[in-house]
Image (tube, rainbow, N blue to C red):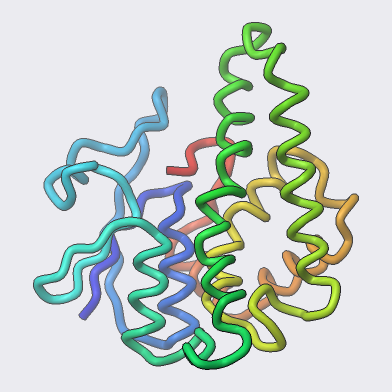
Length: 210
């Protein structure tokens, strides 16, 4: 059975959601962030050298990085991804990587800038502009399809949930992007999403995110 090393307020919530969508059996091993530093506990380093979450164990396999985990589970189950020879595969691949490779960077910068106070003021216009540009791109991607990879819900939507929800929490810009806002409402209403929240606990994007 798959074990999920689950840290509160982290990307591991996506892994729980993915497993719920796939209806795959799993167990949750919980970790709590330090209430002062928001850092993961040292115990996670016993599982993976970086000491971060999410990490899964599947037999002898130990796998970190949420995107890699979500893709591994999709391939293992043979579900929630387009066929490699289909027209939507490249879109799926793009958004699987875009979520962390592009979308999350300015959101993380905004989080850290908030902790720096006035010292971060010179960077604010650039970071806010990058966030707005990414949200506009995400909104436009949903103009002619209900889901990021095409007409069907896929693991790319699970992967994209974290930057979209982080933007909704941190930037206050999401109402300006109605297609993206509607997409967030739709993913949050999915039964598997709700079951994952029940098992993993609610998460606050301004408390962590690693």
